[in-house]
Image (cartoon, rainbow, N blue to C red; front, side):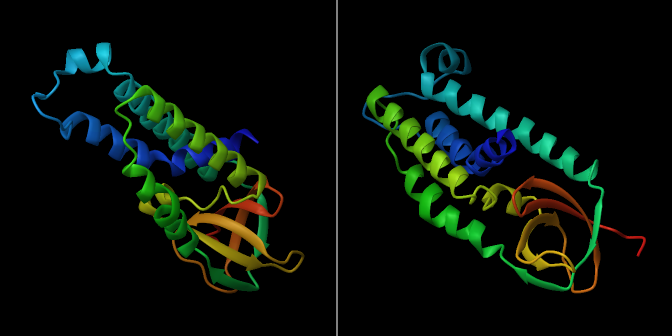
Length: 186
């Protein structure tokens, strides 16, 4: 369950990063002046929250990257493969882009945004859509649906391209969803 939450927070990192940039550099309004670094963290809750989540997403990404590179032991051969990386774009277009325009200038709107993100996260985790992750796509990860000798419709997250008959090391995230790493020895 915690890995699902980590992947969901990673998927929101572009949103938090863009909202952070918006608060830092595009603080609009009549009579406003650019904020100083000191006043940002003392007076601006939004900047602190967005910074926290950007840093948290970075830590979770590093953990995710380590988990893929270490510990995948289940060796399987790919019998059929289809690339499902377009699902990450769907998440980006449906949720991230509209939420960037959310006005977080008031505490009410910030609360509503955080509430919406919690509800979205609960839905994505309960429906096992947490792997649709635009941030991972930016770092070269792809989503594939594969079939092996013993399993059908396995969803894998991996770096690089995948072809039929290649061998993979798998590490389970959840039912039928795995981290994957190519076995370069076969």
